[in-house]
Length: 198
Length: 104
Image (cartoon, rainbow over all chains, first blue to last red; front, side):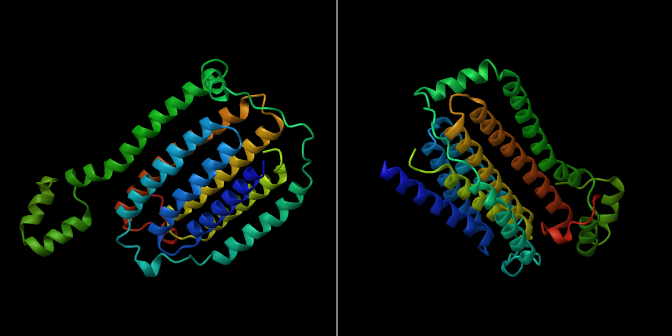
C-alpha cells in the first residue's frame, strides 16, 4: 500500500520536472528528448490507475512514436534556428502569468472535489472489456478513428511532399536567381522550358 | 491506490497542464509549441482516467475516450509536422513571429 504512494509521488515529481525541462530548456533537441521520460511517467501513471491497455498505448505512441517524429522534423527545420534564436520568445511573462492564473483558478475548485467514499473495483480483464467495447458499443467511433488515421496519413505525406515536386517541375524564383548568378545564360532557357533537369 | 486522494491526481494533472500552457504561449518555435500542446493533452488524459478510476471504473466510456484522444492527437501531430515542414520549405523559418502570411 505504501509502495504505491511512494510510486505515485515519485512519478508525479518525475513528470513535472521533465515537463518543466521540456518547456524550459533552451536547446530544442534536448527538450524534445525530455519529452520521452515525461510521457513514460504519464504512461506509468496510467498503469497506477489500473489501466494496462492505455499504458501500452501511451508507451507506444507517446513515449515512442510522437517524440521521434517531432525530433525528425526539428532536425530537418533546424538550420536557421541556431542557439541564439531558440531561446524563449518575447511572450514568456505572459505565458507565466497565464499558467499561474490557471493554477490559481483551478486549484480551489479541485479542493472542492470530494473523495468518493466507495472506490469501485476494476475488473481483472479490463483490457478484454475495452477490446470488446470497441467492437460492440463503440464500433462507429472505432471505424471513424481508423478513417481519420488513413486521412491523416495521406494528408501528411501529401503536405510533406507537394512542395518538393513543384520545385522540380516549376523552379522557384530563388532557384532561378541562383542559377542566373552562377550559370550565365543557360538559366533563362531553363526557365522558358519550365523545368530543371535533376 | 485507495490511499492516494483523488485531489492529488487532479493537482498533478493541473500542474502538468499549466506547464504545457506556459510552453504553448512562451515558445517561439512552432515545434516547441507542439511540445506544450502534447503536455496539455497528457494532463487531460490523466484527469479523465483518474475520475474514471475513482468514480466510474465499472463503465468503459473513459478508457475508450482516452484511447481515441491519443489517436486523434497522434494524427494531429503528424499533420501539424507536415504543415510545419511545408512552411519551412516556403519561408525557411519555423519562427511563429515570422508566420504572418496565409499564402506562400
